Image 1 (cartoon, rainbow, N blue to C red):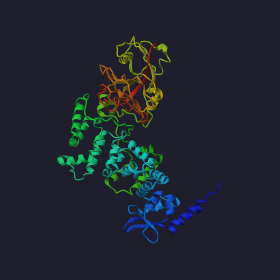
Image 2: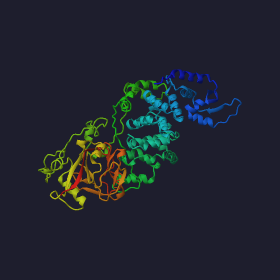
Image 3: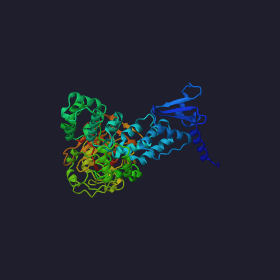
Image 4: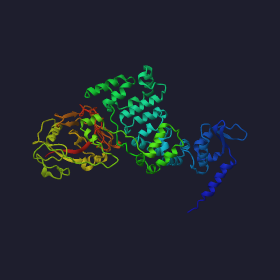
Length: 592
């Protein structure tokens, strides 16, 4: 094996740079009194920095010394000194370098396409200066998602995604909103996984618009039509991405009505109609609820949140926060932040996917008064207490979710129901809908073969695809938590993990079954066959009927919704995301 004598080589290259022997290029950094010239060699640039060499190749010589000059007036001398030493002998030292300089170094490294240096600097910033990254989130986000070269910034992009997903209020509350660009704000509020209540997003948008127009009166009563027009012109590109129909009526009146003038007139009319008569169609496109995956309580410590992002961050956070004070103007807000996170590091409650109006209907108020959250914390492994519904038939045997018709054919009798959710009456009704005729419990022509049970097999979307992929004639049944509401859908062609997008059938339908609250079942047949069934495994979806008519997403317990699009009628009055405590999948098999 050949020996490698790198130490002597690197030492010689360092001397070549420092002595500038036989240099043929001058790189002028900065301008005016703050300018410095670096004497370098084109041969080194050719192999170590093609970016600068290409720029050099375009230069013409206009001097007797046959020297070429590159000017970089906007580049920091300190940053370029680190860069040029890296180019010559591949060594950098970040000791005693402030995080703003390191970030500028990352920007330059990305511009010059130094891949190994880009990866190192991203990890270094995350592991050593996470509070600085939080405080300057808008600058970081703009850079890593809106630079010309994005392919090498995946580490920082992942870090930003985790912040957005797990502690989004850092984005808006620890930063000067004025520094957040319009394109960055739009890309944030477009996200389905932004973990904020919709009304919070609206309030932040209004606050951002006001910071862009500091001359607007503080008191809304004093606003003129021109003031509202100014705000509208500022935020108008952001307005389409607010999920207005996911905001409660109280918040519509309290927070949105004062700014009614900045909304399209048809949007306000549709909102009013929607809350008065939700079954009537509206002209405005109703965006689906956001995917609220996390429920971080007001007692959650910031280091605990950061532990989900990087284990090193939690241990270093308080020390780094003290260091951070050296680099940030001591505003009142930041002083409060430093104080609260050093003495009692907590973060205010993130948005809950539970909307108050929905859960009043679902009798959740008592749980809330007793201090119990209706939604389990999804950072912990979900548990499910298997409370079974009392069967309406007197002689119905005790249900056992491990039994199937395939395993226990002898139990295929009039009273046996292999379900935690539905009864034989329900089965007869569903069979009648499939064949478009009338059956009763004595002449059901189908076996309901249990394929999957949430409380037994889990609620994750991957489990659904493992059990139900490519199986035809699938019936999905779910029970909404804290209610007797039972929803479902029938898919005759099945879902296919290898097929992304919509598949066509005329025979699918969705439904809401009758119970003590709903005296009559609702069936809604497909009216747009081209969008009847949707496969979207890559984006973590499970069963989807239509565009949004019946959707189960990611962890099904916490992410289901029904918004009328491609089926005859809505099967729920409330389009908000809801929680389930059980769901089942059956294959419908014709009896011989």
